Length: 390
Image (cartoon, rainbow, N blue to C red):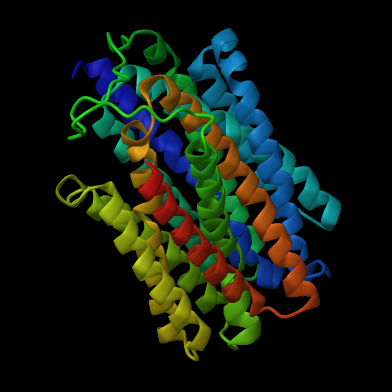
């Protein structure tokens, strides 16, 4: 690989780490934050809804923006927005501060997600795309870990957000220095939309507007919904329902994101031999076992083990389902299905955590576990149906 392409790849990996850094931090900070700011405990779902809706809108508009300004400047601007949002959270004095911080965080995250995915798809091989998403897991693990480590300090969660915001702004400086590289790395010559190499005996003919096409989008909405809901509310469940200290609960939630990262790295060594569908089935089995273990976990060790099981189980689901799309759908429909799946993912990430917040506020904090279990079981049945009709 030419030197400019190698250097830029490192920058892109850091960009996806920066994308993951804010994810999961609210769930770790919230058990302390809502008390410090005298806010209702269920408000976290609404805040996540706002940020996710803005991320979805930013993603939809980012194609035209990237065509106008190119990827490098868009990534730089996005990193500045997310860094500023983190620092605004660190200074929050009430609910409107949190809403104001959600705006740059949501807009910045959506733009950098689409920008980096699109750039890597055009300029690098599929192997690098896989490691790109592993870098998101590194960021999503590091961010909650930083906040959890700061909860025992005098400034608490404010110190955590200050550190993460400063890291983001530092990365923005690196992105500014790398702007010339984005223009010299050549695009790959072809984009193969065929089903070559899939092992299929003939190309699939299922269209995007078939029942399978819409069912696939619904599955992605369900997956991202249960993954996000678990990450947002796990710490609150452990603190309120199980009597675990906020600092320790935050470390347990960090273990959940760490398990997703490790699980995705490990699954890459086996998926070519086992196949996407078997990996998804095995993963969901482990995740369901983990959720059931969480329903009865009475101490920090069993709770941590349950969350690690859930993370390991969820790990292969998203990448394997995405990789399976060309094997399920006709070549002309595959990209349409992928775009629909991404839009549905944002919808799921916005809706379920907010609905869960209402149940936490008005029913019981243990509602989180049962909603995750119900969502995971429903997703498993839907995937089984999709396997049968494609």
